[in-house]
Image (cartoon, rainbow, N blue to C red):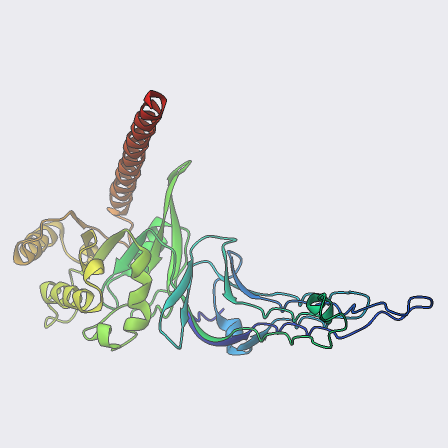
Length: 365
């Protein structure tokens, strides 16, 4: 299925039904009085995250969505029926932005999470609401109000723990195939990957994480060069970046150190927070060099970059050295989870102590 990660839609909530002007007319009841009912409320527009979807391609064909209109009020104080809501299903990870204000309205990051994006109009009041001691036969009713009309941008950002970063043909797709069950296309020409691929890396029961193969980036990506900014945003949800570098390029003019610096610059231009995210270096295609030459070249690259973070030398094609990286990544997430748990326990202890102090003060008073 073709991957579509952005769409623009127009949503129109239902208008409220009109209130009714009516008077009770029954035999032997000459002065029945007003009995016009209220109009029903208009339907709302909701957006629902559905883990069964993985693309926004359906919005290429349908861009306008409407909710049901509320029914008009009727005599005998009968209220109009509310209009039906419209639910728009989108993939998990969809961000909703108002085209008018460029404000992010919501970020649906969990399955089943939903967001009201357009409020239905209120039903009008029937004349039964306007009777009083001085006006026993009101001929007044109010119309229903219109529903919200909004133009929205839907953006899908892949949900992954680890993002692969690198130039085209750095071996990212091969790396994902080596460590997970994902099967992205692999070939010996640039831009083989035209859409993000997700793979689940399972270390053991209840210990796993999701890795994303992001299409290759080039210089100028933050301004949209190549596949550019369209895919940089998919790295936004990741907690760790693996920066893959071809340590044995076929073209002698290609400098792995320069390639790393270029992509570092693009990350900083696009998002300073993303540039400061933990990033490990993976020197790939070591199998194309003899062991001594590979070790020598790896040492030169690390020294040239003054690299301080973890780094690894692998052959993704031969699956050599890939599993140790995955074990280190799992340790990274285990430590992250432990820190979050400890922080939550500490916060709860502080709150409990504060509540106990407040209770003791209240008892003393």
